[in-house]
Amino acid sequence: MNDTIASPRQPVRSTSSAGIADSDIHPEFKDRYGLHPYLSKRWRDHLDQYGELGFEALAGGYLYDGYTPLALRRDAWPDEGLPGSDLALMRKQHLDPNNVVFGVLEPMVALGNGGRNLDLSNAMSTAINDWQIAEFVEPEDRLRASVMVVPDDAVSAVAEIEKRALDARFVQVQIFTGTTEPLGHRRYRPILEAAAHHGFPIGMHVGGRLGTRTASGWPSYYSEFHLYNTFAAQSQIMSLILEGVFDQVPSLKVIIIESGCSWSIGLGERLDMLWQRMGSEVASLKHPPSHYLRQNIYFSTQPVEEPDNPEELNYLFEQIGWGNLMYASDYPHWDFDDPRYAFKARISEEHKAMLFRENAKKVYRIP
Image 1 (spheres, one colour):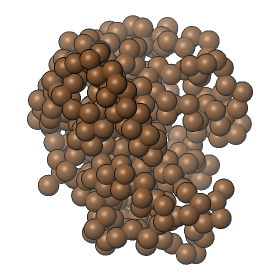
Image 2: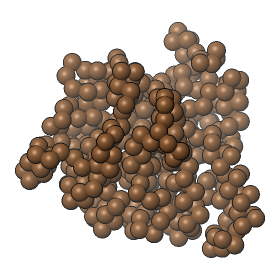
Image 3: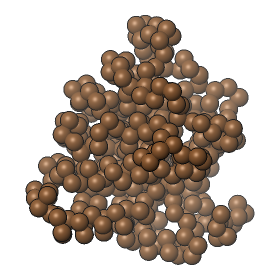
Image 4: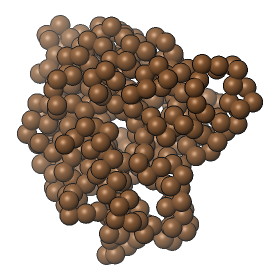
């Protein structure tokens, strides 16, 4: 851990009296039946009898519960239910003390973006969208919902987007980085086009069909498991750019959530070099790949990089683009980034405003 981490008694003055926008807040069910009120009897009975049918039949998503139970903060457990399920505690621990005026819900529940039974997956996605509104957004006007869809069923996904398009309580379409194929593939194009048509960015949160196996085999340690998720975000960016998505859907915005951000600098440089040498392979691409990184890709900051010299963070953020960054807390996970301490560098007031509020308002179309 770096020596430059601030003491809780010496907060880094990174926030503003105007309040902050948080692009990554995780709601949770109170218990395994939390979604039942939003499902038809058919699907309630189905879940009770057969359970969920995901793609990782013999391996769960959390193999290190003794170290970080469900990847959640130990102090965020309410008297009943899981962290993130108690709105009153969320207000007390995060929304109120950190002056959060706008927070985006990122559900990490049920089957994520779908399992093998697409009918069940679609029913659960619709239910999750209704659940967000009823239990979080309706009682708390500082929160906004994400439109959960099933990417493997483009027809149903587009219908769900159109169903929520006129509801200002939804601000993005959520797709996890672990998809069946990279998101640039043509099978997903109708979803991306529908999102862009209705002004929704795509929020690509780490998770989904990643399982617990890395591209090179099974990890030995939690640190490996925690970090390798980032690589899926990089492959998604490459796919979206090289498949020409942003030339065909230029208004589309994609937000990379909970995957870090400084690695995008080297990724853009490497892609530019390959494009200069082998651009004929993607002859329809109109600009160098780094152009699309600046124009169409945004990053939430958690987990933010912490260089030994804190001031180097300004240099990294300048290379990424101050206009491409949005603060994220990841509440209530164990690696939650407190807005008072997350950024150790001395950041200008102009850049603080962009980082903590203005960029999010622009991307999520908040007046």
